[in-house]
Length: 376
Ligand SMILES: [Zn+2]
Image (cartoon, rainbow, N blue to C red; front, side, top):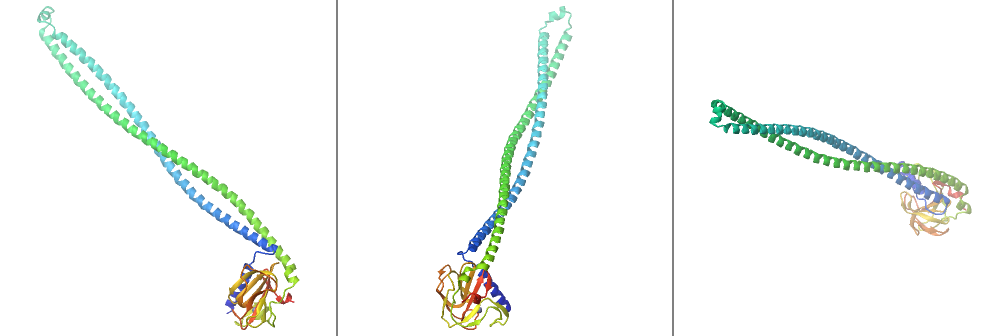
């Protein structure tokens, strides 16, 4: 029981302080400003948060890019080393080929001279052999030796030619490999360029995010200063309102005429029995009695409220709010401006109530004050 009561009191108190209208006093202006600053602060904070998460995301992308660039660079180095090795191999092959070519040309010369010699020998006539004192057997032996040497040289030359051809094929293969590696290297280099470009874009993005965050943090601290300033102003204005309360000073009128059945202050709750603070007075009246606005004001609440039944709240300026509860119905709605004495509702017994009456409360800020101090 007590818990429900406390809960209700909390709700009522909360509602009274929460449902501050937007008119009349400088206090409301300041509260409005404060609300705007708080909204700005929330926006700045959420922007900072999203910048922070973007930063983390980009940093991880930069990390990945760095890893990729590293791999490509390693590939490029390896490929360049391989190409250098191939170039050396090709140079060696060229040297071998030219050695073979020299061999071949020497052997060609040798064969040519042997062929010439054998031709000369074959042209010697038997008479010449006789007169020159040449032994025909020797001539024939010389000839056959020459022929033997010539064919041996020919074999050597053919082998050299074969070797040279083989070397040429090997060189061609090496050149093909080199060409392939070179085109791979070109691809790798252009890939590296793309990655580096991406990295630089990401880095400049990161930089601009950092700058934006710095600016937002500055903005945040400025807004926080404004909020502190507003809170100070509001506290001052509340103090001033408590001292002046022009509405209360110029005088309220009674909302209804009738006997006071319960006064402001600590009491035993008539339904639940627990001790509670009665934040107003109860005026005993018949159901359906017109309820009047005690002062000019704006309707800030006209609806059901647990415990209070149908309830109307008016903001009467200078931080003063009046509250009318346990109603049957109301003739106004939230946002209406009402004049002092205007009928705003009809009384009843709705909510937690033991009999037909009007509960009437006066608040300065969110603090309940005794209505009897202000009623004529
Ligand atoms: Zn009451």
